[in-house]
Image 1 (cartoon, rainbow, N blue to C red):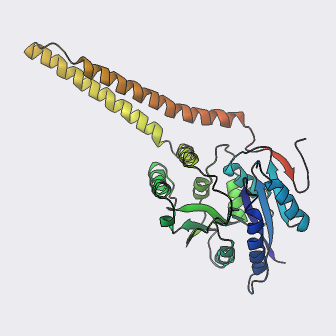
Image 2 (cartoon, rainbow, N blue to C red):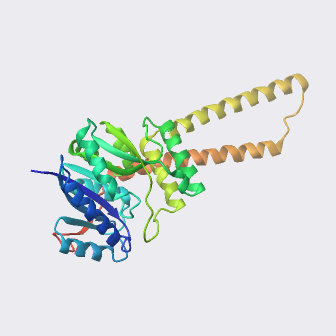
Length: 321
């Protein structure tokens, strides 16, 4: 009996690109099924992340034409991390692969990834971008800076250009699902659970239709969430800055005390005093903000709200009604 590969595809407002994607992935599914040495069956699992266009209607039509195409639709937009979690939870396969619907993760790479996964001792095959020059200046340099900062501030070692395009064995999927946190950063979780991972370079495919849902603001917000999820370094920086400023203020106080005793000079410099007060006040607010972000995450974890809510699947229509 052939092994089963679950192809998990998070999507948000992708009505334009989905027909093109299904045409491309159907050819790859046939290729996987007919591999000479290691054929495998496949299932497609789409996660509709609360799309406001006709994405859900398109997914319904896919399922009506092919029962091996499954879908889960959220009650609203919960974000890609929630979609990834839902996909891994509901995948039935011996292996699972995550990929985007916009064809920037080329489907034709799946057979190569599958062969690497079953013929080597690795537990996952992960892809990293090897063509950053095609990206805009801001996105390219910001992404590179993010990976450097993330690795410096945490105990992780994420490959520069790492993506969510990854194929995993069931043992690794189960390990990921055993982590119950609400605030999730999948790239960090993949690294944290361990297991042997083989990294392969790839060139990002061209989006054939639609527009990217990742604006500069969303990328920055996602980066901050990632750092706060896997590093306590910002809190350590706050503590060390507090110690340094206490020491500086103590030394300045001694300097002016000695200066007044020896030379009898009055302590002057009101503009300097104002600037110091503004600086210290700003730093205090910054440190409180950083601490507040960690407290907010603790607050959300304690609430234990579900990461996502399912409205509809291919077997249960309008579950939320």
